[in-house]
Length: 298
Image 1 (cartoon, helix red, strand yellow):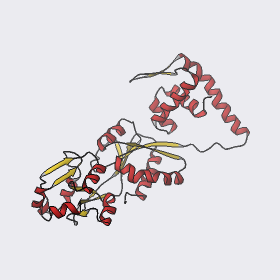
Image 2 (cartoon, rainbow, N blue to C red; image 1 turned 45 degrees about the vertical axis):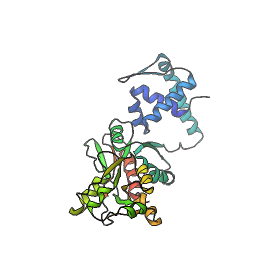
Image 3 (tube, rainbow, N blue to C red; image 1 turned 120 degrees about the horizontal axis):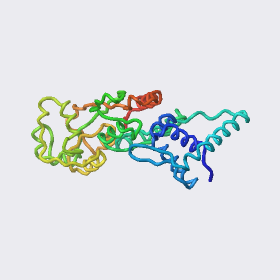
Image 4 (spheres, one colour; image 1 turned 180 degrees about the vertical axis):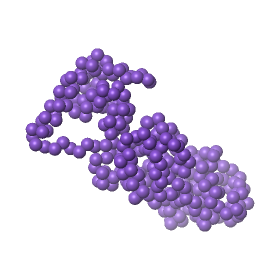
């Protein structure tokens, strides 16, 4: 196996900047792609090319010796393309988009093939984590962009508003048959299903509810960590849940879930976020536009 041109160009860019992250920005690819190309090149050559610590990058003797050969190889490729009268393919860009698990599975992943047709020059990788972890990864330059919720207030980030996500309070008909939920006091005999002790699903609902419902107190709260787990337990009659409308629409239509206090349907803001110091602003604007055109609706 021989080194590829992309591997050699990546090696030369790192050798010039002595920074994997700077090389990623220059090549318009994710940092993970740069690391993987170097790993593959080192495997092909059977020698380490860089010494990396948490604070610095340095060429090894083998890496230093490779520079002139790598330059000649890349220049030869360009000469071959010119001699053959062929245009080089348009440069491809790669972005790693951070997104929460349920949105990744039910919203973003189904869009990837459409995006590939609309923007064949752009490859989007997904990084799945919770909101706080995505925010931290974005600030640390471990991912290129993220879909974040309404709590996004960070002067280091570009935040582009997306279509808001509406929520519904729901429960299984079997549960509501045993324990009616018509007024706030009825909740005392029921279990609330939420993601964590902060009640991130219930709180936006309470903020949008009329005064007579804002004092609702459930007899028990079960923390389940993810919307998918909440959905499953709610379907089995294990409690009352506040879930995104796109997640529950088909269950409501099929009668597997029933809306509670149906008039209360809050909408939480979502944002496409990227670092302000990232020079790939046009790519971020293009991706945020694609997200606005295809909101999570079911």
